Length: 401
Image (cartoon, rainbow, N blue to C red):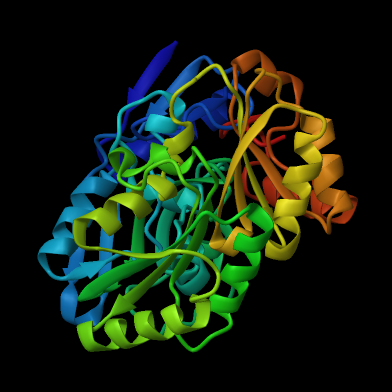
């Protein structure tokens, strides 16, 4: 295997152009933190973008940041924190869940995987904050889309098209994101001891209130003990995060206490403890051990999620917890079998959604569809897009389908 290391856009373009001329596939790689997601690649050559690094523009007053695609996300988050700002969609770190190091993700990978975290309910995902990109298509052609201002209209929004493409349409070389001020205060209200169905009702009640809850998650019994060093204990915890200015947060937490006072025992969590809890929920820390056990990420209607999990538990040994008010379900198959057909059938039965196999042995990832199979019309559209951007299937071939 040959690894081509590109430190500039010109070197990236030259490498992809060579691969197109030779009709030889390339694995597109940043720091490899998400390398284990998707179907295993069969490529002889790798394009390593880890040296394509550095912030190229940062204007805090304009809420805009541009960086080369191989720039470590941790470096960008540190810079933003020093200026009281953040990537509001708080992209998750897949590294520990996949058996790697933490804080190895890159800003290009954030967009390619459309990453987000528990604040998805309020802030959306990476695609909702991208302003512009520079990239090299699978034709060996450089192109740009969007710009470096928040108010920008340039016709077709190719920047958003790159979200969740996993490096199969183009090689990102530079990205521009909108950034936002970080919250002054963060407090989490925990309702203790609820079963999954009661937790779903409590989260729905809280999200429907005027308390402006930014994140809502439920950690069932025993799962709760696996976050933030066990600070929550083993009792089930239904967590509601409120952010903003101090007096506003205090008022809204009080309103939530009045609203949920009969649901169960209430606890307040604040400061770094609250940050740690939500960071571990974001990164699926409860399931980071047991690397031989497959992990699934399921997105479906919040009201149906706990019912689907109950039906799944009747037929398979599975551990689970819930984010996004129950709309995101993390599942770990305890017997090492991906259970793809069973899981996807139950997701369809309970209203539909998407199930992605995030962690599994290469043999399992080669044997089952890792990403949710598309309906025929969507599959045809995806094939047309692939043919337009990468007609010779040079970029990450077979990773998604």
